[in-house]
Length: 124
Image (cartoon, rainbow, N blue to C red; front, side, top):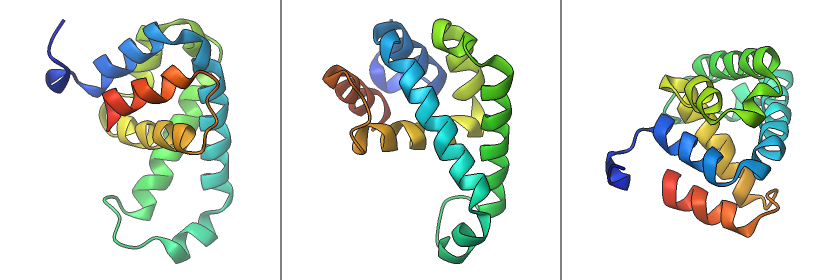
């Protein structure tokens, strides 16, 4: 295995899924809710969006792409570390989903305390 600082987001996500598989369905449900909220509250988000890394249009596009992936692969993402990582953490999608992952643990939505430690180790 490579040193942690050389792992890509895809590799980190694959590792997270492999280590803590039981937490993934709950995270994906949270991510789906979060994505629906982004897409259903566009007008509100436009008014508060300032000085972010992406334009609000890009954020909406990422939310739409993640929503499409969640709908297309549904339960397969729960069971396949490769599919989970390759579909959700590749490219710019990875930034959007990693943001959701950090919110998931920050808000205490996770069940396994080890999940927060793993997310902190891999994605912060």
